[in-house]
Amino acid sequence: MDATKRPEDVVTVDVQAAKDLLSSGYYYLDVRTTEEFNKSHIENALNVPYMFKTQQGRVNNPQFLSLVASICKKHDYLVLGCNSGGRSLRACVDLLNAGFEHVRNMEGGYSAWVDSGFAGEDKQPEQLKTSCKFRP
Image (cartoon, helix red, strand yellow):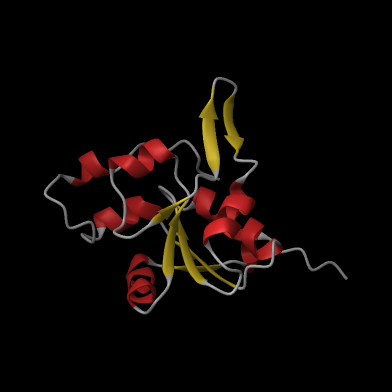
């Protein structure tokens, strides 16, 4: 029997549900690039890039799972987000397959968070978001 998790096995929540989970003790794991994260991010977010931009295009971060495992325990409660939800969905699948138990994907990613008015910064939404070419 194949127990490999697939994207349809991931629990995806909207930004309001994600915000509620974060206020109840979940950690937010931002899987965008360091450049995207440094532009703007959710307060107290952890950042482990799922992919990198290279001259050859976008490549998966080969250390993603080991880096997450170095800062999170497999029984920690995590909400993952990227810019629009594609990378974080794939990252959730990888984490579930690595034995992480409580993983949620934030639908729409950080863009949806900003559009919902949760960023709470003085900047315009367009200044906080980055264009994303990582969509599934």
